[in-house]
Length: 237
Image 1 (cartoon, helix red, strand yellow):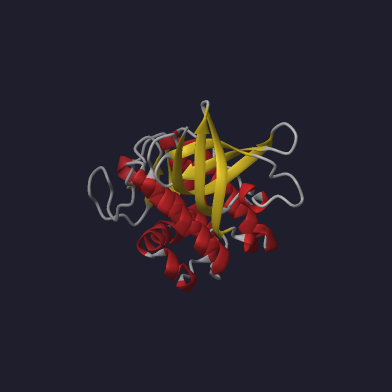
Image 2 (image 1 turned 30 degrees about the vertical axis):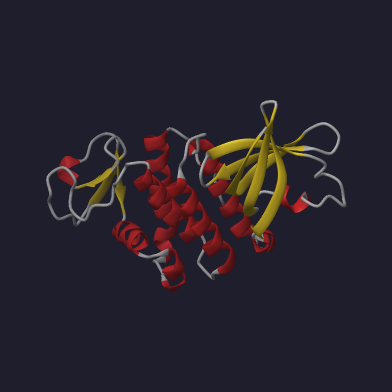
């Protein structure tokens, strides 16, 4: 028998026999991991809150006959306030859904830290709808190695008064360099993405992007990550 202790965020769970759960963990040191939690479906179970999505804590995991079994959890935060706001809850669920698609069983500490920052900001700060999710999409795209924010045309270097986004390149381009895979981007959205990129999570509450650009920004960031990482991002209202 071997054991490990790791900080982790619960991504989801499914029922097992009797009162057990199979829990999907995203850990700081070991990436994504499936673990069993015994008896946690019981009303008086000590660890019943630790099985819930968004729960963040330090998990002690024993490996017994090839099965990873959680024996202890020190909960740091369960981000309960996300359940009080339907928009924040959906935004948080979309964030966890992305992690399920990009996280592996390898160490991905940078993505873990970024996820934790996003959840804390979403839960406790008064940030406008989409801003935290947008910021997370920008940072995750960069972590995955697809830097895409450029002030001038990525192809010819020209200053852009009219902007397009080229999905094949994952870059902003000018009208002269656009391709069939390019679509026009509003200047407010173009500048908004740059502002989001430069603003730290703890300062997002001070940001006020043009209302007409908010949905367009989300569309651009989601499409870019979908093309780069080959995943489908959960739609949020």
